[in-house]
Length: 258
Ligand code: CO8
Image (tube, rainbow, N blue to C red; front, side, top):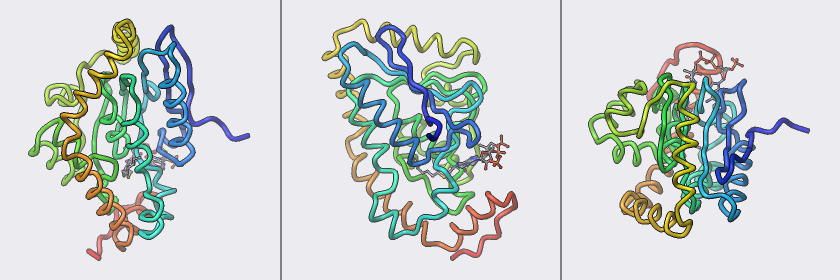
């Protein structure tokens, strides 16, 4: 039997999901996405659960889409299967508040997954980035849409066009995360907050979450669709093949601009 790509536990009324592909820095393989969505659905339906925490390890949250998997995908297959849209749609469908606890890298799809959470707490070692441009593609799971809402256009554009990362304190000062704490304290702090939220009326909490999300979501749906189409289109570029190949072969990409 293959190893589980996530670890699931409960602390009182809190459902905890930990991404668990340490050898691949918790990259988002299809198997991981399926298991993650299934665990979220189970917690969301369970009346004994009032809030959910999504985290990785103390070293890494998530290094994005699985580069080995994505490398094999043509534009046509990505387009036809709506590659990775299910992650966004699945997270948005969760009624209970989801607190993301981010330690280490939250890169590419990892940063996008973090931004799908409702509240973010970061450890002091957290690093956020959208490095897709270095691979010959663009963010494909909300990065171009949510980052601008979280930190404003200039900072978002800077991150997306340079691929440069920001650290935890920059993420806090720009509004991407709610709190930054030492790595050994951040999970417990998130549990405290989740406990507080889970103590309120479940339907009222769901309504508050939905109303706040509505503010972000207006216009987001068409933006996500647009982003997704361009992201899938980038799979047909020779530069995409080059960028992904170069990463796996541990060399600098030679762009041909095609
Ligand atoms: N996919 C698959 N494997 C990965 C990934 C990944 N995204 N990231 C790292 N790995 C693997 C490496 O290949 C390496 O494997 P091996 O030991 O077999 O060589 C192992 O994890 C450890 O990685 P490193 O040795 O590179 O670790 P470092 O600590 O030196 O560096 C970094 C950490 C900086 C995070 C580096 O690994 C890195 O740059 N990774 C790639 C990050 C990236 O570019 N991510 C973007 C991917 S594209 C994307 O996410 C598009 C968004 C699509 C939407 C997805 C939403 C679901």
